Image (tube, rainbow, N blue to C red; front, side, top):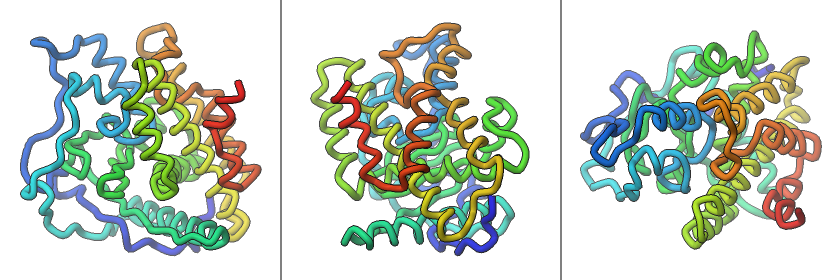
Length: 308
């Protein structure tokens, strides 16, 4: 992936050296016993929670189980008061700032062409666990977008896991795969700006079953995959950023974090009603649609599902 010419975003906050906690409180743990989770469930959630997506304490999903059904509580004023964060100075921080800057420039142009104004998100790097606008989070949850404070939360150790533990990519192609991960989260921000995310949340609350709520979340996640493809399409047109092997690496990553593959790895069998992000094939398909079409209108996963 060619990213040296990307503008570096000023909206990256580096909390990695602060222990991840800004505003008091402890990390998020997995309760065991006493109404908590069993060890087998923890293993499953550890894998599924690793997958990309919105903070599950906001959308119905895996972390709702991790929290034993507890509802999200608005952080106190003390929790919301944070010390200013530093800008990243290391190579990984530079890469993250470059990719975020490129998504800002790309989506600003896309929104402008449709007569709208793009409001950029912020991205917070952390290590281990962190207190944010959607409550406590830990690295096992994977990267996520919090609509409450319009921030993307990223523990970059996720990229190491993506390479080594889940073999989602290898070699230099991992850079584009990592950019796809970030672009997916930016896709959730785009959904929020377009009003799609609030509607999906309301639909989940009104859903008559957990399976139906999960089905809605899958459509949200697949649309974010497609929007990541839209970003890649426009970025490549303007900056010639995609190199040979990059797309294959992104598709390999999409397959590695499909719900069916994660469930099979964790428990040996697949439960489609428990999907929260989509199967490997679905994630690959929708990223490819966005990449080829380059249009937000091509990413209407909800309409596609209604036609089935």
